[in-house]
Image (cartoon, rainbow, N blue to C red; front, side):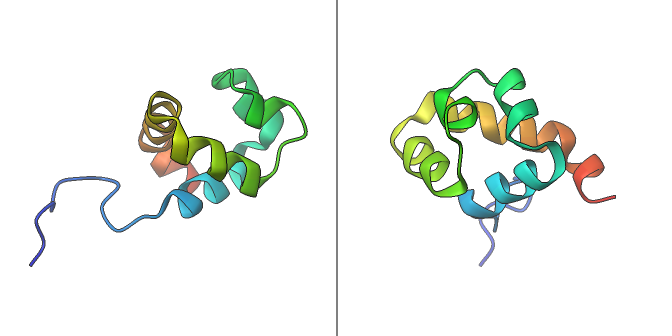
Length: 75
């Protein structure tokens, strides 16, 4: 049963979100939009995932950026 039919992130993993954001914007732009070290200092998908999984406020910012730009990313 689908309990979150209106959640725009339903069914997406954090890895998918970060990978798609990085592919679309690149780490330099991500670091300018969201000022966290995992995007600015020696960035990688793995280090970003490790940090975001432990840091709820940063994960929320990344998720909001994804939701805001979802149509641009998938066009």
